Length: 374
Image (cartoon, one colour):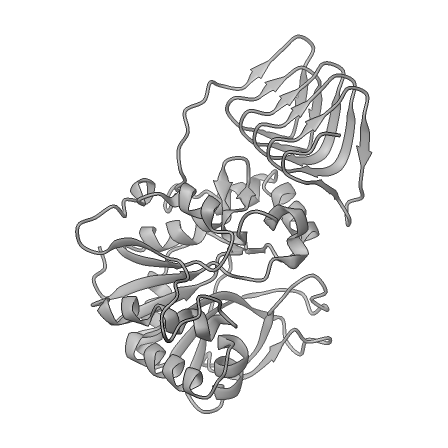
């Protein structure tokens, strides 16, 4: 157990490009890989590092998130001292309850930050999927003498047309960051920010208070970009699988990638497991001539038709004669007989009537809103 660091997860990221998936839930609560939520990954990373004090900064549509997290029992964060703290917006003389940006959000929970006794803070978002521990990153931060250490991975030199707030770094040989680009049309480097930063708590307090006093609103634009040459920022490279759920197509593609063994082995490494809220369900049932190929099928599913290259969440029913291919079907969906679905995302509780045909494309999957009947 680490007593020198605590975690702060911001769950108010922009969600417009995820469309109907975030109509009634935050990005952090979006289901992923059959039985998980996006926040499970970063929260498990913190817990696997030995961190016992974690704050969740909520902004809007956080009912589903609070229901999922509960007391933090599944992550062993239900404690008398420290534990899991959900920090929703609230109204005071100084706080309107509506955040203009991340600076406002962090400033509103400054009381929690100051009360935390740990020396270091790990600042993470909730829309990035990866599985690791932060011990090596914290060690690098301390040894380098950095004011801020930012996690990055190597990606292609392409235009990030489906991402928001993507940062690209220019690095010296010792890892110091010399330049940062935000959403570049023509990225100068292939080093991309993984939405995770480490710094001393006092440094974070000073940066937020200073930015807030100047009327600045965004931590990335108004702190990281402006101060890259004023304070020492270093990068820590992560070579594992990273998925940024920044658009509907990226959400679909990262779910499809989980069907690859190498991706599953990386994300669900027994050395640092991913925890989630557990629900008791009967095992999946395959009826009659059911055929399933290269798919993830969660507990409680009933399969009577054909399923290929799909991710099915709990309680999904696929009727006789129905064919699903390249689909992500969330919890408790009911697909009746003789349907054909291809490149589709069905949100929770959808019903597809007999004989319906739905088809998208690999770069543009169709999405059916929660509870819809087609």
